[in-house]
Every structure is written in C-alpha cells, then in structure tokens.
Amino acid sequence: MTVRVSIDVDRCQGHGRCFSLAPALFTFDDLGNGVVLDDGIVNEAQCDAAYLAVANCPEHAVSLEESP
Amino acid sequence: MSDKEPVRDFATDWDHTDPRWVADPYPIWDDLRRRCPVAHTERYGGGWFPTTHEAVSRIANDTEHFTSRTVVIGNGRPLEDAPPAPIGVAPPISSDPPFHQIARRLILPAFAPGPVNALEPMIRDLCRRLLDGLVGHEEIDAGAEFAQFIPPAVIIRMLGFPERDEDLFREFVHVVLEGIDQPVEQRIEQFAPIEEYFAVQIEDHRAHPRDDLTSYLLNVEVGGQKLAPEHVFGTMILILVAGIDTTWSAIGASLWHLATHPEDLARLAGEPDLMATAVEEFLRFYAPVSMARLVKEDVDYLGCAMKRDDWILLGFPAANRDPAAFPDADRFVIDRRENRHLAFGLGIHRCAGSNLARLELRVALEEFLARYPRFELANPADVTWAPGQVRGPRHLPLRLASLEG
Ligand code: HEM
Image (cartoon, rainbow over all chains, first blue to last red; front, side, top):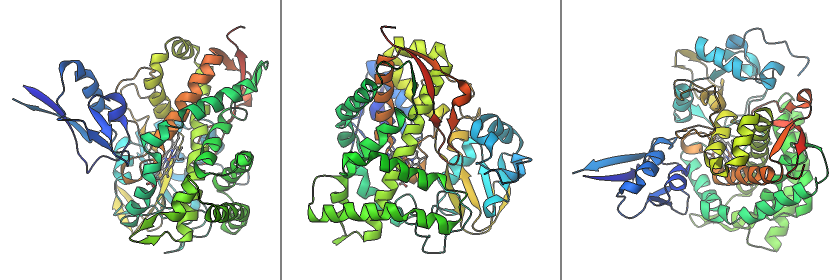
C-alpha cells in the first residue's frame, strides 16, 4: 500500500503550514501556495510530518490518499 | 470612549471598545459563545459578532453575502461604490471578487517564503541592536522599547523608505487604527500627513526606481496597464497598517504570556525546539486581529435577521478559543501539535503577510529569550492593551534577569 499527500489547489490559500511542517513532501510556488514535491509518496519516516501537514492546514486543503 | 453608555449585555449591545472587552475579552467571548453564539449590537449603526469557529469560517468564506468594502468598524458607513478617502480603497483587503484576486496576486510574490526568508538576518540583527540598547536596564517596556520597533523597520525596508522615518510610521498606524470613535471627517483630516508623506516617497521612486516594493507597484502591469495611482497608494497604506500594529501586538502578547507563566517561559528558554509549536500557540491563543465585513443585502443568516450594511466583526480570536474546534481551547498548550488556528484569517483574504509575521515573531522571541531567559511583569497594573480590532499590549513593563544575573 502506498500513501500520498495531495493539495486541493482550489482550497489552498498559502498559509504555508504544509511546507513548514513537512519540507520533504511539500514546497511552494512563487505566490507562496503549497506544492506537492515529486510524486507525493510518503515513506515511513515521513508519516508523522505528513500527518501534521494535514492536521494543521486551516483550509483543510491537504489530504492523504491511500492506494494499493 | 468615556462618554459612551456602558455596555449592559454584550449579547445584545456589544462594543469592542468597551473597557472590559479591551482589558480581557476572553470571558466575554466564552459567555457569548455559549449563549448566542452570534451577538448583536445597535452601536455603530448595527452589527453582529459571531464567536464560534464554524460561524466565523462560514462568513469568512462567503463573499456572496458579505463585502470587504470596509474592514474597520467605525461610526460612519462607506459610500456605495467609493469608500471614503481614508482607508477607503486599500486593495486587496478592501476588495471583493473578482478584482480581489488581481490585487492580491500582485503582492503575493513579495511575501512568498523566498523573499521573506531572505530578511531573517536583517530582522535578527535589528532585534539584537534593540536589545543591546537596553543593556544594563533592570526594567524595560517590552512593548514600547522592543516589540514596536521591529515591524516598522521591516516594512520601511520593504517599501524602500528612509530608515529614519520609523517613528513617523508608528504614528501613522496609530492614527489609522485607533481613531475609530472619531467622526469620519476628522479621520480624513488626520490622513493628510500620511498622504503627503507617501506622495513624496512615490515621487522619489518614480524619479529613481529601485529594487523595492514601491518601485514594483509603480511599474507592475496588469493587462498591459500600470496600476492606477489610487491602487498603488491604497496597497502601500494597507501594507503599512496591516504589517505593523498586528505584528508588534503578537510579539508583545507572547512576551506578556511568558512574563505571566513562568513554567512556559522556563520550558521555551530551555527547549528552543519548542519554538515552532509555541509560535502557533501564541498566535492561536492571543490572535491579535479581528476584521470586519458589511452585510450586502438583508438576509437571514445563522438565525440572525441581518440588514444591509450591518457590520460583522469577524472574531478570529474568539474562534480560536472555541472548544468545538480545539481540545482544551482555554488552555495554552506550548507543544500543541494540531493547530488549525485562524489568527491569519481564512479564505481569499488570508493574511498576505503571514510568512513575514511568523518570521518576525519567531526571531523576536528567540533573540529576547537568548538574552533574558527569565523575566516577569514589573507591575501588572501598568500593562495597557490597545482598543479596537488589533489587540496587543501597548505598554509592557518587564523586570529582567539577564543571563549573567
Ligand atoms: C501577527 C501578525 C499578523 C496578523 C495576526 C495578521 C492578520 C491578518 C488577518 C486576520 C487578515 C485577514 C483580513 C480579512 O479577512 O479581512 C490579514 C490580511 C492581510 N494582512 Fe495580515 N496579519 C499580520 C501581519 C501582517 C504583515 C506583517 C503583513 C505585511 C507586511 C500583513 C499584510 C496583510 C495583507 C496585505 C492582508 C490582506 C490580504 C487580502 O485581503 O487578500 N499582515 N492579516
């Protein structure tokens, strides 16, 4: 099973919580909105950071998706 | 303020300039959240105050029923399509869709993490110099002698104005934010010096363009056209007002908390790794900024019969204390891991300067604690809190114990 992070670009307002809390998974564009790095796949060591990115987004724009 | 009728019941007659609200609003908000949860007032021509996370979020995201034409509550009502001169057009904060997005996207790159993080050394150096200037003092006013100097210096640098004008800047902010009880005509008069000052700076930048936000605004093009002069001026005023008072309030309130909670002070001074969660918790617990909206048309909303042009006081700070949204909402938890606070608002008007504000708050606290790991209030009765929509300690006399002491 793989877990990926994703950002709903319609919700993101650039609060910047995801890339501060999980810099290995997220970065930002030139407006300061969050961007998922690479394929967004979360490895075991990144689980906690990924969870924090989801749990601290004021706009509920960040989510985790599981795929088999 | 003194000639006003005292508030009898905040549920039906709230006033955010009431001395009790100014001194300690939290018990009032908790009470309203349980009883209302949207409080009403006839003051200021009529207004509503939502206190729950849910209600505040809903209104902040609803640009169909609410307009940002004016975001600071006053006694007058803005005119239909041209808000009155003072803070009138201050895009993007006073703009609604669709224009809002254009105005906002123009300034976002300047406040994105790249350019903001580049300011860190300058901010750190500034904090150190301020603290150096206080060496030898056993008591300082951490509001007036420390916190208040940091944001103006940063904004002046971003706008490219002469450094010596910092004091003038703080005076400007005071005029804009604390004149809420004065008649509109008087407020317009008070704006004259600000307009003159900005006009001179704009002229200078036109003649000598350079790499700063003022030159950027003067030269940037939207659809092949430069911005209207009122737009440039309005955005500069907004950055001045939004960036200064707010941030020094956050720095001051955080120091006030540490001065009155020795266990949190000891933990933060001893475990610098806590700073990241501590900064977010300071912002949640002491969120300094409440913004206003106007009701567009008569509407029944959240069980309230709202009238066109009623004020909404968007209580981001009250939402941050809502137990339905935060476990132990009334406790300051320095290592709170999940913190979806609304200190910087929500939705399309999310504070454009939030990266900068967080940086200033963190660096100011780091430098202060590195110098003074122990301090307390010199005299609690001397602490005064600013009235109005930006709450923070204006005077914060602290008794210091330095590293050597
Ligand atoms: C701790 C400090 C700060 C707090 C708590 C704060 C809070 C807020 C809030 C709540 C809003 C939303 C307004 C609304 O919904 O109507 C806002 C908007 C804004 N803030 Fe801040 N702010 C802070 C610092 C700053 C700084 C340092 C700057 C820039 C130098 C800044 C620039 C802005 C701008 C330009 C907007 C308007 C954004 C828009 O309408 O799209 N703020 N701020």
